[in-house]
Length: 486
Image (cartoon, rainbow, N blue to C red; front, side, top):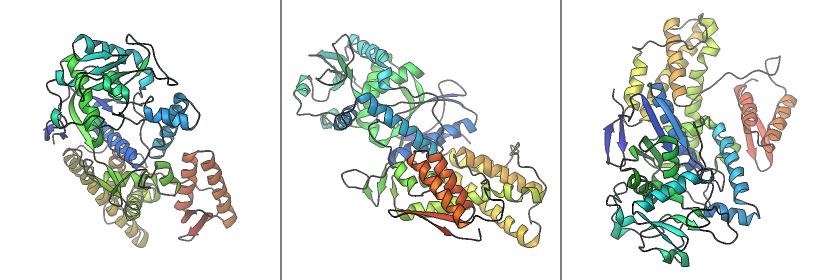
């Protein structure tokens, strides 16, 4: 059951072997913090969160670093629009990022370096590139001489003669400063200060770093010359990751990463998600509409991570139903464990457990999470069936001790995928809530949402849902529907 990964660099699936046995150094190119995170960010963060969880599950010690790009033209433009500062904009959306990720149950990385906190490392790397003949100054700017790096294009498969300047959308090719480059394919490592923009002192004059150099410096500072896994969205393959390789490997002479992994994009009703098309959905907008966080995780994990996925209302409804199936299985022990005579601790699961083996066999094939989920759904449906038999016949067909192992296995494997469910705490002494109590909880939820305490808002909604009370949010407010005696 060897873990094999599709490596973008080699364009094939390879056995996973780490630089240091038993340890994984993993870096994820994080977000540029100028706006709220959208579904594309959600997909990437969920995928790499689960990759990290799985590597830990199979015994690796993982050091996981995720950066924030907190200086960029997009951030500066936002600051100008709001008559604010780059730092204030970045801080606000970093805070929002953590709020959104917490709602999706995404574990925090071991460290979140920021570009503005890595200036020494950035300048040191540029200096090393200049000394080795891979960089040149030009009127306060510093550029990377792409043609000096003979392997340029090895990640993306692009040829220099086919490349177009400004491919990242972060470069204005009509800007007079663009003319300072010796070659149209060269890219900026350092940008000279402009009036009204924040700047840092450097050997080349006051200025700020280019986009690509940030990640190379942060990887080098936090994880060393060569890491095991470098991840990001497929839209970063060129030019960002290609340029990272050129910058880092020109200095160290070593591979920047052994494995390059990229997740596919999110589409909306078959179209690319973009603000210009008006189909841009943020994580908080989606969750504030009442979509369950675990349904979003399933929406991501039930697709192969490298393929595009299409976001539709039907897809979310389907994954919500799927989550309810899993949730019922995850709550089996809390509902029936006492009646079956066993405690609720997950305890140790036998190494020979067939379900564990099948789960690993699936996921070891390039992180095939959909295949792993097949095992979870089989367990959940089996527990659901046994629960029905117990209710109607007073006993189960499968022995109680065996059922406990099945439940423990489901809980354990679901946690690897970040899928967890806990029984709700009842707030009413009787068998149900009165309409007045429900309205009071709805008001508490509204207050929590206004205060941006989304965890509390989700808790109240889940508490009501566990008692058969569904909330429907609309422009006119929130109403409730009772789906069972409550």
